Length: 154
Image (cartoon, rainbow, N blue to C red; front, top):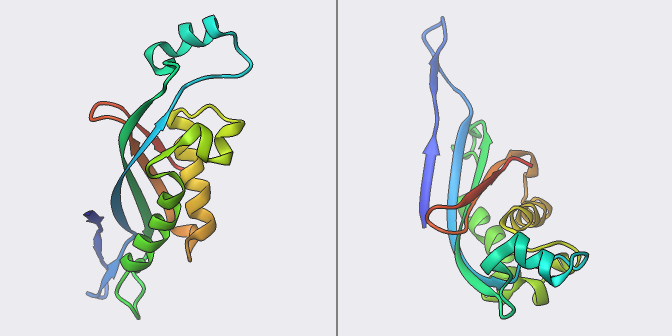
């Protein structure tokens, strides 16, 4: 688990310190397989468009998923959001994709090509429907490889 928290303190004229917005990030890792294939294209068009990612047998990735929440610190709890809740909510989403064939096991990908871009939109929508304070959902980053990632702000 990696946790990154960013915050800023601002001094007010009366000498008190006020909190700005805080970004809280949790990272999880999961594995999934898929094949980039658009049913509306011919086999040749799919091969030209997706290259080796169109392999008939598919391929897999070890994805790293980062979720960033952004908001004020709750004066009662001292937190932007309870990390135990975020962990459980992210896990409930990951149960749908971890060690799955995205194209065969996830209904969303019956009608959407299983690109990393579409996967992050799916993850956003699923988490947003499960999280206790969806208005805090600020940003997601999905790393497909060490060199390739997508960022989504919903």
